[in-house]
Length: 236
Image (cartoon, rainbow, N blue to C red):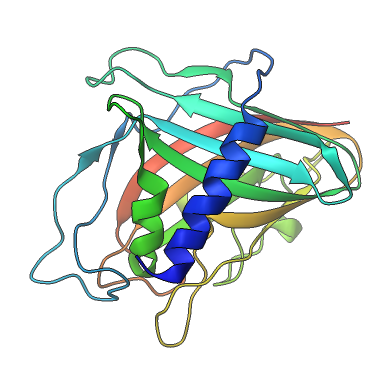
């Protein structure tokens, strides 16, 4: 594997041991079930040839977070769907982010297939195939003026489901991607992010992984969604 992939695996192993904790119960549903598309073209290839491949079965998306100024302030939010048919509701009892106000968190996305023994860490594969994957993180409620659509924003256009609100209270959360692929020029990926919180607030975080072989251009619409899920957010 490339050194960047080995580094990711090492960081993942350390973070998962540190972060596996419980969370409060919430309600919430996913847009998609758990057939999450992952391509099988060459590592770091910006063009998938001869054609985009089929799907792999994935079950779990985790967001592991740690406060940049307080290592004890950490947690892991877990969205899980173990039903291969998608008929049963996903387990969202741990799909919650409890964050401190006016803080910055380093966040790592971890994607798993828990039907395999040992558990398959699919985010390692996504890292290898980062040139045609792009993560989006949409906080809501959000005002129209704070919804920013650009190649460096994690916001999702209103035409793709984001609903803006004319009046608060708003969720005071800004997400910034910190990792880049090897396209020319490089584009953001979003397996690694910074979550910056403002004043105390509550809401939802919609997380979407876009699967964009041959068509990744830094925008939301090309390709399709590997997953489209929601986490509850509490900022205190």
